[in-house]
Length: 229
Ligand code: OAD
Image 1 (cartoon, rainbow, N blue to C red):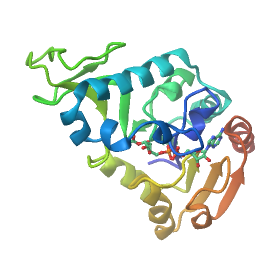
Image 2 (cartoon, protein in one colour):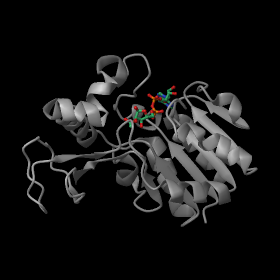
Image 3 (cartoon, rainbow, N blue to C red):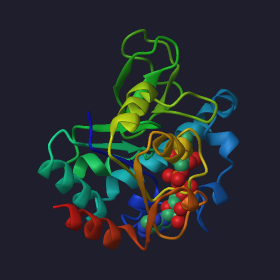
Image 4 (cartoon, rainbow, N blue to C red):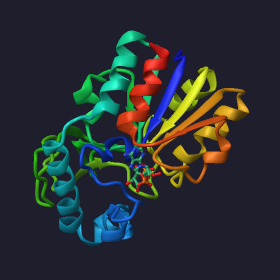
C-alpha cells in the first residue's frame, strides 16, 4: 500500500500554460460544460465535443511538464511504490515528467480513444472526428476516453483502498468543487490520516485539511517535496 496519496487538479498544470476550469478566464467561463463535458452534450453534437477535446489535446501536446510535475516525479522515484498520484487532469504532463507508474487518471486521458459501442480502447490520434471507425468493431461511435459529468470516474475502488491505508493525503491545485475527488479529504480524515492542501489560494475545502500551503505550484510543490527528500 502507499504511504502518500496525492490528488492533483488543473492548478498543477496551470503554469505549463494549460487553462484551469473555474478560475477567472477558466475553461468553464468560455464553454458550456453541459455541451462539451456530458454524455448528453456528446449525443447532441459529437463534432463540437470532439472539437473541444481536439483543442485540449493540441494544447497538451504543445505544453511541457513544469517544476511541480518534475518534483512529484522525483518524489516517486526516491520512494518507489510508496507514492500514488491520482490526477483529475486529462493531460499527460505527469507521465512526461517521469510519473509513468503509480498514477491513476480518474477522469480519463486525452491520449485515449474509446468506442462507445463496444468499449474498445486505443491511443487517440491528434484529432478525433465523429465518423472515425472503431478499430475493433468498425462502428463510428468513437469518443475521447474522458469521464464526463454524470459518468463514474475510473478506478475508484483502488483509490479508496489506497486512501484508507495511506499515512498522508495531499491535494494539489484543485478547487475542491467536483465530487467524488472533492470528498477524498473527508475520507482520509475519517480514517485518521493526515491531510495537506497545496493550492494557489485556499480552496473551497481548505478548512477540511490539517495543514495548507498557498502559492504557485511550481514553487510550493518543489519546496514541499524538498522537505521529504
Ligand atoms: P479547477 O479549475 O476547478 O480548480 C483549479 C484550482 O487550481 C483552483 O483552486 C486554483 O486556485 C488552483 N490554481 C490555479 N493556478 C494554480 C497554480 N499555479 N498553482 C497552484 N494552484 C493553482 O480545476 P480542478 O479542481 O482540477 O473534470 O477541476 C476538477 C474537475 O472539474 C476537472 O477534472 C474537470 C473539471 O470540470 C471534468 O471535466 C470531468
